[in-house]
Length: 184
Image (cartoon, rainbow, N blue to C red; front, side):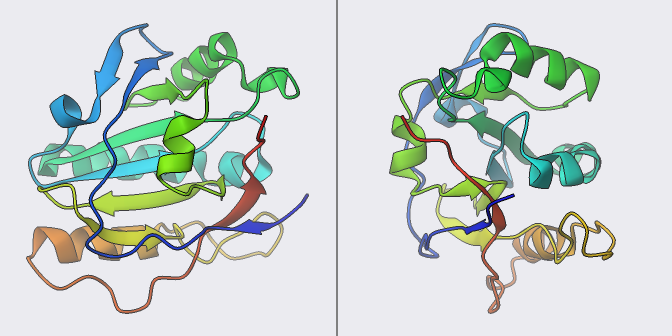
């Protein structure tokens, strides 16, 4: 299991716009229409990564907790499906339905969105304010497969709480760690 850290994405940087297909219901989702009234979490994930599988349940819990508070969640998979067919859209749909994702699971076929966000790994978390300016880019928490630490979601949760309470962005933003995005 190769470990890749997320790249830097500056606090205050505007979220690049995109329109991608939601594999769960075959609709098209564009960031401007889907952004949350209080903020937006964008997370790069995939089906097969053990780091994503490790946090999937907590990701669903956090989305269910924070979407009613006005923070939208969007998941994106950008992996090369020719080399990694387990990440194909029809299987993304199955994973999203099986895990009851309460958010769209978008397929970035040409990998342009991942490049615009400088996404490097799965999972890779971004939190944006109401103006789609970055306030957080980092890990979900300190848990990793096999390290024995519980999956709490505390880092992302603290960032979302700061956003909701109009507090400044977290000073400490640890990079996410996961499988590298599978580039074409």
